[in-house]
Length: 275
Image (cartoon, rainbow, N blue to C red):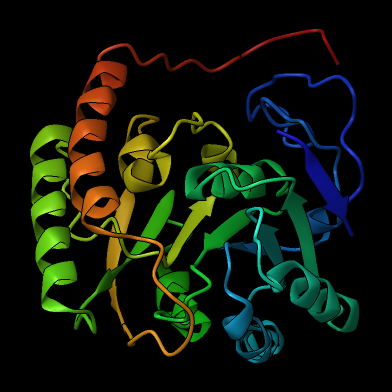
């Protein structure tokens, strides 16, 4: 996958894998320390063909950055958009001091975009929200109080503003996922999430990864907190999901997760002379 690096330093040609014993060099890195390392929180925004929402996102996110209790920046990940999303993201990042972006050469999917954002993040915490504006960055403030005691804090869309079909398929998919993963998460489809970066970086990349973020944190013995957040109707752009990728694909992915869960490996380095 070719990635265009914009406003972010180029990656080091050699990735050195270490554990969180060494906070300056985190595992499986394909990036050098970059500008996100100067912040406490990086909000990752995956984008695919959301040109109509970019400037509204700019307004809401720039307001959030100035009012956030944590020193925060924004990282847009353009997932090979074929509309004017990339051009608008570049324009926004050129006029907003704390906004950064990277672009894929072609569409790779939400999981890949999210993982690329995670791997590029060097702040202590990272957040995630979708570009469709059905959640608001203001509600990150509802998650902040729990960040020190939990490795991940996730939103629950308390009052869904979606169609009956979308809500029904989501309920079925969430129920089956809970049955298979035992993660206890009510609404893993809610995109408003905050994670400790050292845990997020150890999440493996695979198609459908974004549906299992809480369970993947729990596999590392991390604790997950759920907090109700607001949900809004989509005001612009088109949903990228249909019955197949909202219901059918998640059901198959659950079996893949079960296979991986039985083969998980957890370790912590206690001593080394590599430094």
